[in-house]
Every structure is written in C-alpha cells, then in structure tokens.
Image (cartoon, rainbow, N blue to C red):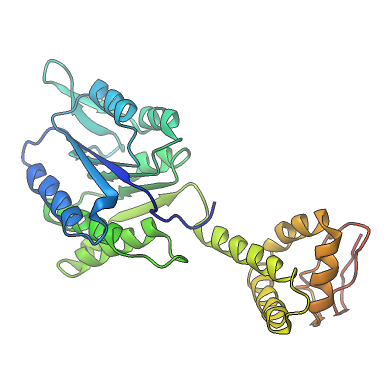
Length: 293
C-alpha cells in the first residue's frame, strides 16, 4: 500500500456515547466547522449518531459504510469503550470485540479515531484490520481531546502533496494543535497503522526507480537511478530482498539496472543478495563475503 490520498468523497461517521461530564456537543460542532471551512469541504460528508449503544455502532457502520469512524466518549483503563445498554446502564466494549467489529468493515473504513481516554489498546487491536487507528495512551483532558480533533480535521481538509500521507499529516496537525495549548498532553495521542508507512514509501520510490531503468537512453534518468537506488538500499538493508524479487521476474530489467548501477560494494554490509534469473550480473565491483546464487 502506498501513501494514502483523499481523491473521492469521504464519509465521516461520528459516534458519541454517554455525554455525562463531557463536552461532546462542542467536539461534534468543532469537527463540523473544521470540515466546513476546509478548502476541500466538498470531499467530506459528516454523519452524527449520539447516545449510541453497542448495537447502534454495529448498525451505523454497516449502513453508512464510512471512510472515517470517530468515537467520542469515555474509555476505561483496560482499553474498553464505555457505552450504555438499553436500560441505560454502563456497558464496556473490549478491544477484542471492537477489533472483531471492524474486521467486518475493512473494505471501506480506512481510519478510526478513538478520542477517548486509555483507548490505545483498542487502537492496537483494531489496526490489525484497519489501515489507520488513533488512540490515547492515558487519560486525556476534555479540552485537549477537542483540540486534537480540531487539528486532525483541519489537516484532513488541507491540500496535501502527493508524496505525503494525508492521515499521517492530519495526525501531526492534531498533535500541534494540542502543543500550542498544553505541550504535555501532546504525548497522549498515538497513531497505529496496519502498514509500515515509511516502508511503503520506500517501495514506491523503488518502483519508480525501476521504471526509470526502462529508459536506457536517458542518461539523466539513469544517473538518478544509480544514486537513489544506492541510497535506498544502504539505508535499509532489509529492502534488498524485496527489490530482488521484482528484478528476478524480469531479466531485461535486471540487465538495465545492473548496467547503470556502477559502484563498489565492500565490507560486511554488502547489499547484493539472492538476485536470480538467466541474466544475473554483478553490480559493479563487489568484494567481501558476498555470494550471488
């Protein structure tokens, strides 16, 4: 998966529960206002459900098919979300149950924001199925929770460069919104991802570099290929196996890449490994304990 960008209309489903002693109405209003003043406001639709019970959450997500699910309310120290049952009594929903719920909605839910105290455990469980999940690693002040929501949705509405992940940017914007008022509280929100965002970005760059190899007459492009591929592999040796896989499938690409990658590789940190196929070639001058099968 590559960097996530918002290119089509997104539905934000806000689920609010047990408003006692919380300013949930203010949080909901702030979210709506952030979207309305956004330069990309036409890209978002906000649906709000209040006083939700466990079954209400299940039905709302299934019927609305949101891209973003935002939960505001109370959280327990074990990571559970606190709701009410039909009789108005407290009902805790555990991280494991929440994960099983979102497992059913991986096709359209891309981000879950648990803007409640102690919700990082639920975030960790849910991220096994949802790409981006935000939780709180301890109790968070009501004011700080609202500030984070403001910053997050402000960031979501900004124009974002193509090489920047929109949800990661929105998360950082939320942290800054807290820092401007109460720096210590900015350590509480935590972003959990199902994917390694940095690794995905590196692999995307490698794919682009390999595409450059298909232009052997473009000396400038080949120079970029040589320098950037060397830089990427030296920074992350674990990527060499993943680079080798696509190369092994296309001997023609191997030939083009190795003929442009003129460098000396020495020492115990050699980055050439297990490139196979009929057109294997050494990449420049190789010394040290390197074996190419």
